[in-house]
Amino acid sequence: MNSQVILLLNIAGAAGFILWYAMSRGHGKRPTQLDMKAPDHSSKPASLPVKNLLSPSVMGKQGSYNPTMTKRVRPGIPQEKYLNVMFMYNSHSWDAYEVLGVPAGSSITQVTEAYQACLKKCDKESIEFLEAAFQAILKKVS
Image (cartoon, rainbow, N blue to C red; front, side, top):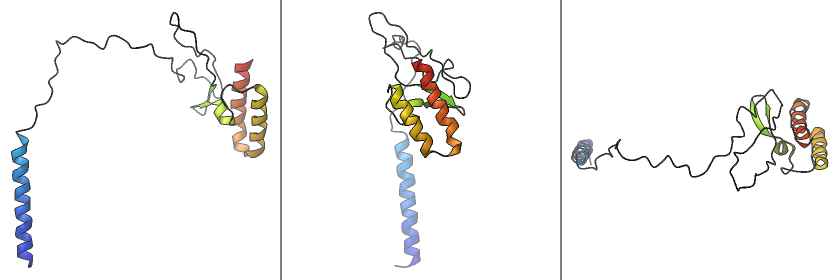
């Protein structure tokens, strides 16, 4: 097979593709049209959302915790208790229990033991971060 035959096959393939593309463009489905007069069914909320844990009421100065995280009150439904403690450090939100490596809602003795174990393992740059997590849990407990 010489190069002229390969060139003719490529030209025939390209022409076939262009012909197929041109023929298929006009026979597709029409796009969905927006009906502005249709009734709006999205105004019924399925449920009330939980207040965002990263809302401005939670955010504060570095390493602080604001315990005003609440859920919207719905009649007849008991309030849930948040076990996690969120705190801000270097403009990022962190879960204090997760930082110390204990389950959310752990007792203060477990938290203290985990904090002291983390202090022994970590480098000097992480001490301030662990201290902020520990203080956030202490503020919530007291």
